[in-house]
Amino acid sequence: MQKRKIPVFYHVPKNAGTYVLNWMMTAFRYYRQNYTEWLNNYTPEKTSIKCLQITNEGFIIAKFLIGDPNYFCETFEGVDKKHSKTEWDIDIKNLPENLFKNVFLFGVVIEARGFRCFKRVLKFAKDYDLHQFIILRDSFSRAQSFYNYIISNSSNHEWTHGLIKSNTFQEYVMSEQLEDSWLIRNLLDIDDFVALEEQHFDETINLLKKFSVYNVENTLKAIQDTFFNCYNFDTQQIKLNSWDIFNKNQTFGKKINFYDLSEEAQNVFIEKTYWDNKLYNILLNA
Image 1 (tube, helix red, strand yellow):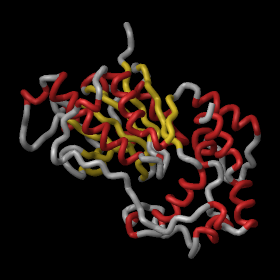
Image 2 (cartoon, one colour):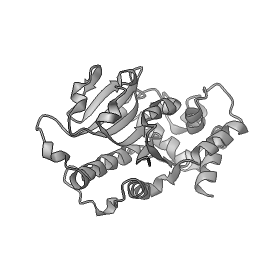
Image 3 (cartoon, rainbow, N blue to C red):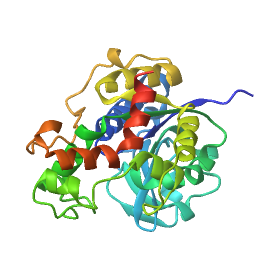
Image 4 (cartoon, rainbow, N blue to C red):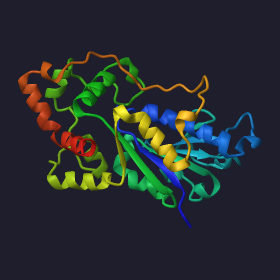
């Protein structure tokens, strides 16, 4: 029996992940409206679409977008928190073994905290054909975006808010807090104190060969390709409603050119992001 194909999005921080998730929910509602009869069983206080936020040690590691027309999830024990009719938190240890025998899995989002344990998460989706995709961004613009976001009020809801103590981006580059090969370390679960080597790079490349990889500038193409590939519909044909708002978590901190950094800071940045840049150039400039 052929496995049903579902999208699995890997959310790298500051790489359009919120925008993609919003589109995934919009595409899911479109799918419900046009390809199912779930709304025939409509109940005002419940919803047939849910976003199960999978937690581990208190952190969200993944999101399962599920169709639940028979309200199976309402029978769950061990739900940590219900934010709304749609959005629930549940610890990965409390997920029912028969979950996907009773609900429709539309798609999966692996959140930043889940990269190091993505295989554990995807064991729950072993009966599906996984269309894995990821969006990348050049190291310098991502580092600036991350810095400006974390020091701004926009990140008040994030556990990382206020962790960066540097007063300027250059200070951040020269500090120990500048991220060092985030994607490689998190996909392979490598501690920060371990020096990266060519074998780690090669392992990451081999892993990402199974993914569709996009530049952040091609985010809409990533969305269109994904839902055409998995569900055979064109997201460009979706008529958006007033509530279909797509936020990109934009921050408006000061942006500088790489060459505005001191020569010492330029060299430090190049050294620390060596593997990131090599990965980006090979995957997106091939």
